[in-house]
Structure formats: structure tokens, C-alpha cells
Image 1: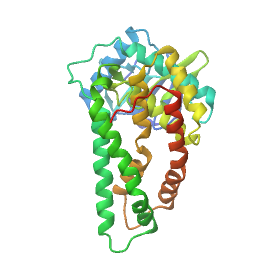
Image 2: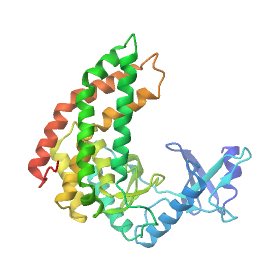
Image 3: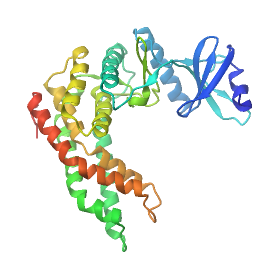
Image 4: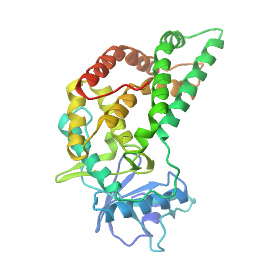
Length: 329
């Protein structure tokens, strides 16, 4: 066992019977069940808020979450000899949701609906009601525009630069249109489903158990329209499954069985799915990398986004046929 970590877990009232590494975490087998030890990835005040949210969520009836374990001194944070802060959480014996297996994805969206229902029992804490996703998309549009401006000024352009500039207008225009439509109709999206959200409902934050599913890693929790969580999961599912229309409809309907959807909800989801998120991600990666050498993988990702664009647009067309979406301008 790691000597550095042992001095951390020795601050807790439990016996450690074994350990193994996970995705940026250390999973411990203890006399009290599975526990996870990981470096603190947020501020202390944010950590306290997350801990409180999880306790309220547990009280609301949703129990399969990674609640924090306090040390012997009643503190959430425990530091090693180098003053590196760690936290300990409950954990579960399950497997990560496979984003290419339909049964796993259906279980994940059903779990999300259950999670959302419990989160709606928690009163928001004195925050101004706003559509955070709108502000995020506005910022993303500005970042894409900055990348293009930078590329224009480069005297010697790479193949990646030429490819990016050749498709920029198409994706950037989509981003502008989504922001405009969200701006013009945001009240309709705020008046329903504005509650706490997980904030990062990706497949690796869903553990499938023998008797259901568990949700972990709430570091990005926020107040917003809860369908943002569903969109986060759907977007990745579509990217990994070539924008399979029937799969999208099955996942939406699985969520809707527990959390019925109305016209404004379908329209909000449509706008989110329309946004060129993957193109922005590539733009952001480019903005933060050494531009003297563009990794081949980044070039391949951009090629994939361009290749998938036609099938994505076809999916959006089928979406409008399937659901009662009134396209507000």
C-alpha cells in the first residue's frame, strides 16, 4: 500500500483490506464497504456545498450517490505530509455505463430521471435564476471566433488550419443561431425544470449495479434547466453511435417515461443538440495547445466532425418530425 496514502486513510475510522486504482482515484476495500480516496479538485466552500447537496439528495430518497466521509476530526479534507488535500467518499461495486451498449444507456437515462426527480425536492439556495447554458454557448462562440481570427493572421498555415477555416462559417453560424433562439425564448426554459443538475452526466459518472445504478462525481453540480444533463449524455451517445436516430428516440422516451416532456422541453433539447459542441471542443483544444505542431489526432477529430455533420443534420430533421417542436426565431 502507498505510504503517502496510508497516512491519509489512517485518519478515518475504518480498516483497509485492499486497494486498487481507478479513473484518477484510489478505490479502497474496507470493513465498512467500498470507499474512494481522491485529491481535492475544488475549493473548500464548493466542497461544503456539494456535501450538503448530497445529504439533502439522500434525504430526498436518492441513496446511490458518493457521499463524503468525514475523518476523525469531523473534517471533509485530510492532508498528507506534503499538505496535499484529499477527500474520501462512499463508492459502489458496479461497472461504468458502456456508451456503445443500448441497454446500458437506457439504464443510465432512467437513472437520470430518478435523480432529477429527487433533486427537484431540494430548494435552490439564493441564486439568480438564469439559463447557464445560454451563457456557456455565448462564451463558446466567442472562443471559436478568436481561433479563426488567430488563424487568419498566421503567415504559414497547416493542413489543420486550412481545414478548420474551410468549415468554420458553417459551424459558427449554427452556434449563433442556437444562441439567438435560446435568448429569445429563455423564459420558457427557465419556468420549467430549473433545479439542481448533476452538471457532468457522462457515462463514466454512472455505475451500473446489480439492482440499479449509482451516480458519482457531482463536482460540477449547478442550477439550470435539468435537461442540460440529458443533453450531455445524449450528445456523447450520438457522437459514439453515428447519430443513430432510433437510439436517440429510445433514450429520450426512456427519460420521458419517468419525467414527462412537453413542447418547450423538446424544443430546448433540439437547440442543445443543434449546437456545434464538438467543433467548439476542437477549437478550445487548439487554443490551448502548442500551435507549432498540431497532433494528427486533432486533425482526425476535425475530419470526423465534418464527416458526421450530414448525418447529424439528418437526425435533427427526423427529430422535428418525431416531436412537437415549434421553431421560435
